[in-house]
Length: 106
Image (cartoon, rainbow, N blue to C red; front, side, top):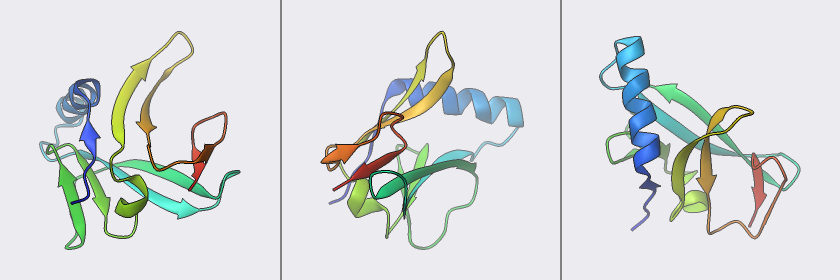
């Protein structure tokens, strides 16, 4: 069964965003599209909508049937550094990747 692991850091950040926006069902939506410097690229957005072909993980991350095989087994984290803060995906399916972490190849 396809799975995405949602790290506690991502859960904490999404909870903060839910409170700030007053949206109890707000989730991080992860989709994969062709493109980027390595072949595929991640698209991340915030959404309260869940479609029929979506899969929800830990109640905080959602992805669709098409994207899921490419990111199954991934861990989603939220990282804060001196330069900024962002959600990061550690994808074991990625054979190659770019320096910015936004695209990957399988």
